Length: 260
Image (cartoon, rainbow, N blue to C red):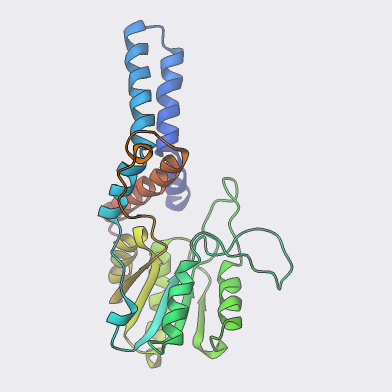
């Protein structure tokens, strides 16, 4: 029940949903003062939520900063990859793999593996979405493993966890695997999107695993002070703002429930 409600809550509390509710309320109300006030609020929300500069500043504050591969001077036993958005759900043959927007989650551990800084790679995550809302890639875990193997990772160095549906379960089921197999070692690098690292680190620590974060798939960019980024709202700003607010809400909910 929590899984279902949390997913629905995230969609309801997003910038576009809230803005639409305000504007619809403005259209339906017969009180002229309230209508004018709601319309002003709606316009302000459009400008703020769609402001590229403001959204980017939010990501710069929230994301865990990058780690330079050169700064990693010790060998880690396992690199843990959290699935989600790495593989596109475009239909294809078993041999066709189309990477998606967070492919950096497996590209960075692949680089470190090739450099001899990671011994094994554990990929955690099953189907993470409600199919009534959005179709997820049910075999993202397997497809990612297939791709990594084709790119040079030994099959014996790949570990798959396929049950987890959310970050908390990623941590719990990964901890079960690692604790049952002490021969895998105790030094772990955690790979997920930079804006998702805070919640991920908290969940893994709650599950009893000490992990070192390695942020990937950054949404923040270098600051720009152009007219477009400072003044003109954009669809991209709205889209990225959705992810930022979604993650902040998710982190707060997990904190309240004691998951991280």
